[in-house]
Length: 468
Image 1 (cartoon, rainbow, N blue to C red):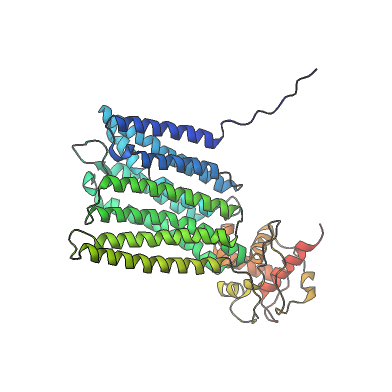
Image 2: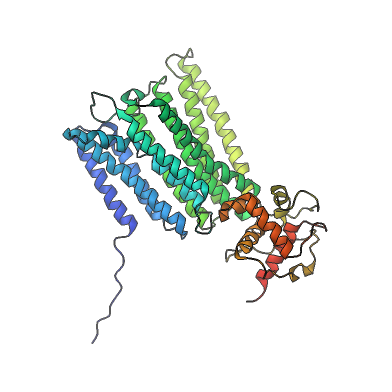
């Protein structure tokens, strides 16, 4: 009689390991806080928020997209490192250790890497191939430099009593101009990917537009977190808000932004472009921005030096909430509808712009972006009225290079030149060159009842239908 051998399940996956490490850090911070050390760094709300975000990011790393999964794992590790450095900083300060200063400096800069990683994770989720985009390198290098400069130039003021809060008077900065310059570069780096992806999304069509829009909304979370940090400084003076409370709020906001970005990356990587899901993502980003605007304006209105009384302040803040909140709700609803709009087939004039350029992209791809196929491709486009002949598929795609096939496939899904560039990690000039080569190889000349982009997409769809 032989005993059956059952496979042993993996008990120590990344989420379990991350959860165990995060739990140990939270427990250590709780013990240090109970002993009267650490101030806001040992606050259970902030510590738990970071721990939950680290575990969530490690779970969301299993998106099926290799590059995005690696970056999501890095995001989880950076949040876990932030927690661990908090433990190290509080413990060394409590013990009066000589390494207390460097430990606090490292902890004080550990919030920057998660901002970069949440953007890179979301951006990678809509890209194909193994090439690292130049924009990713720029974001990584600039924010890495910002982390290093912040750690080297910013130190806690003396006498050092516990860990300081976000209050500006708790810190001193050496070589302030250098720090300011690096800060400005960091802010510019955080705006690069949102601007690039929103531009690519709004110029594309149907499923490609929705996926790029979800990724763009995710990358917006990082600059919104920085804005929230700046608003906390405003709330400190002139708002006179308790600095420790603001610091805990920042930790919670950073954690929430990380989870939001990782979840959006999974949505984009898996091609989940349902109207309800896209609407939820876009509305979450838009309403968060609206809330920050209301909080910032309300803080200034309610400042101790303001001439408005309590009743007037309440009325002003209520009016701002209604106007800004309502505008954000309506605007994000329209944006979500635009991102998920079904393809239409308007007449296309043959000379509506250079067919290999962004103008031609906007004019032509609306006709070829069909609804998503259950297998992950694109269904037949609506071509009534486009004037594409039944024999358009006779041209062979066999002479196209592998990259040209990728470009043509992305065009057929509804991507604009910017959208194709964002997905394939090439420049728009390169995309334009590939399209012109594709038109030549397919024998597509300008003129006719529709432009070459539509005819090329039809040829690709006919090719995809042929039995293999």
